[in-house]
Amino acid sequence: MASAAALPERKKKSNFMYAFTCAVSASMATVVLGYDVGVMSGASLYIKEDLRLTDVQVEIMMGILSVYALIGSFAGARTSDWIGRHYTVAIAAAIFFAGSLLMSFAVDYAMLMFGRFGCRHPKTR
Image 1: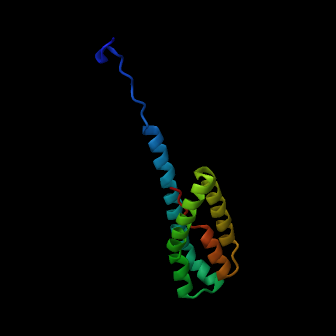
Image 2 (image 1 turned 180 degrees about the horizontal axis):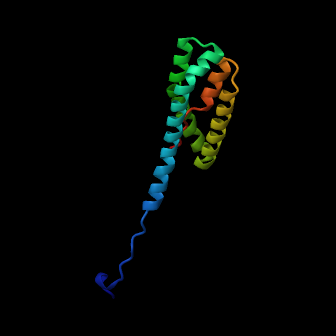
Image 3 (image 1 turned 180 degrees about the vertical axis):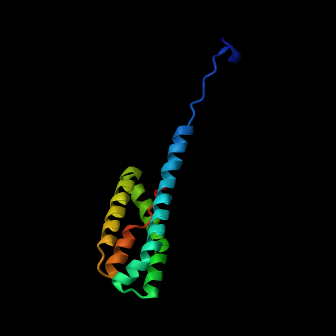
């Protein structure tokens, strides 16, 4: 019987690249959210003028993103449990794209807010 010391040591497989890729992918969602907030802060002046919005409507438009993100997080968690993360991310990207298009072609406040809902920040767990 061979002793434990005589057995060759197996190298442990490093999960560094997998963990790094997951971290970068997860942070990209935050980058997209930050980009959306930054773009909207500059565009809100022109949106207010074009759509003749009140100050309160602009404040709601800018601040509602956190509420939409909460709804999107719950929906993303349920959806990923139901159909899987891969398809959930694909659906979230399609909704984000549709919301961006809807916001760019908005002709009134209701259409703008509906498009803003599409630009929420869904998360999968």
